[in-house]
Amino acid sequence: MIEIAEESARRIERVLPVGIIGCDDDPAEVREHIDELVELVRNLDVVPLEPVLVRIERVAPQYYVGSGKAAEIVQLARECDAECLVFDTPLSPSQQRNWAKLSKLGVIDREEVILDIFADRASTREATLQVELARLQYMLPRLTGAWTHLSRQRGGGATNRGQGEAQIETDRRLLRGRIQKLRDELATVRRQRNTQRKARHRNAIPHGAIVGYTNVGKSSLLKSLSGAEVLVKDQLFATLDPTTRRVDPGGGGGEVLLTDTVGFVRKLPHSLVEAFKSTLEEAVEADFLLLVLDLSSPQLDSEWETTLQVLKELGADEKDIHIIFNKIDLVDRDNELLKLAMVEEQFPHALYVSTRTGEGMEELRELLRSIAGAEHRLTRVVLPPSRHDLAALVHAEGQIYEETYRDSGELELLFAIGPELRHKFQEYIL
Image (cartoon, rainbow, N blue to C red):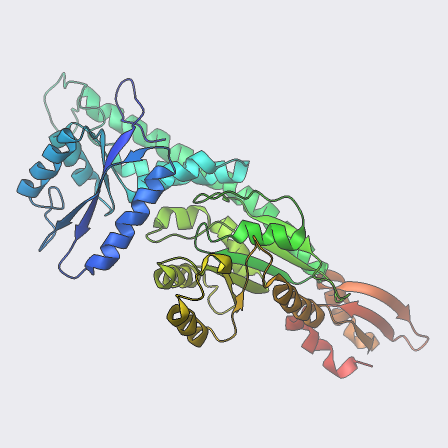
């Protein structure tokens, strides 16, 4: 939760969101971003006041905005009894300190709000480690000025520092040590996750990742398809840890594994993308992606662009991607015909579903059946004695159903293996 960093920290209840419109910015887009910031703040059970939008010609080094405009914002914050200023634009550590000194209020930016939400949502050890790592990386450059209450007892100089400076250096060493320890612990978690992934590949079961903007219904989709209990909440970032479930789409064509992943958001802090790499890697390692979009969202285009951008950062944008539009039950089909026509033209092969009413879910299961059938196709081969390397590959990466050695020394195998390896056996197929 948002707190003011004082000797006895107190919880913030009323915040004033501030958005900044630069000369190259689209005002409508900035307003969308500030609306999302308001929603992010609400997810911390904090009351957001009416946002302030400020136009600037250039970035001022001291406050990001000019000193006169800064004084106006502080005066407005005092008039409406705000306890904290929340900027949608990232502030440098020095700008954050200057605002705090000028306003005597708590001052944070969008990144810290998202970090607070992640800290509030983290439940497993992996998520807790990832959030703590991101928060410490955020705090490290902001230590300067945190100990100004300690007076200098000796004169300044390169080797003669006061208590405040010494305390900052001590804290920096402690933070760096903790950051390294967290990285080591997360490396262990990632090795364990890689072992789990290898086990999935050995089972030769196609694995898909459900990706998309936060709060589009990814967890609801997984719950509806698998029938298993999955955390489903109408809030941002309800899912931080990947949840994998077996899904039998019916028809006897085999199963698929589906993994729910952490939702994306505009201006997702790079530190969080880095910290949650092991979670988001589920999208990189998956055989296919179900990219879920909220058809009822007024920011559909920007949410689509954000999701694609994060996938590009992860190197997963070249995957086999299937577009799923959720929440079709919330769309007024009589009055939004133009929107629907434009969406259908842009995404001609997309599926339209409602996890609440069940509409379109059978078509989605049919898609999964076709994927399972293609991925899980049984293959029978006869390998010559000279190709024991291929036999070892099947044992390591596939699932064997029959294994028979012939008198001639040849090995007959009936197995399933991923399509990316199946071509290696082409000349030996019966």
